[in-house]
Image 1 (cartoon, rainbow, N blue to C red):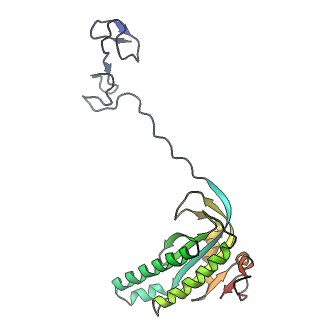
Image 2 (image 1 turned 60 degrees about the horizontal axis):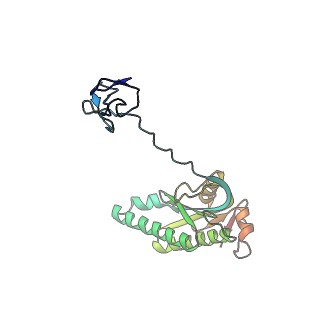
Length: 225
């Protein structure tokens, strides 16, 4: 019970005004015991929070669904050795031009750059928007990127891998975090097996795009040209 400082009447907990005289009822700080008026958020004596603070609403969990997507991985071959023999500022400029070129080429074919990892780039087709020719778009982007990198610098070469399959897609994500799963890791391994200046694709990608792209057999993967 709270005692009214004005008339001495007892009032139940939680009331802001005395039921006997209408005066404001001062409550005690739960930390130091100092009196405070209704409406105060913090104690004037010790600074402790007064009352219960509502917890912040938890961010809604992102929606994830499985979709058929096409993943492109590309990286620069021998870039570490090249960077060791050149001025650091020249290397930075060259890498920036490569990143800009990758974004331009991938965007031209409707892909989404997922992330850059060192001198490698990962891009996704089929999410957030899916098209019937996503596999072909990804392969053509890879071919154009390999060619564009060669034009950037005589000592620079790229290689790429393209794989089509099912992946976990985070709806609403932009950039990093859009697609995940074994397909992503496998696409990276396919890229690492490609020769400099070539594009290797998986069987699903080949089947989805062979009507318009010429391939050569290379075992489990297929070089596009």
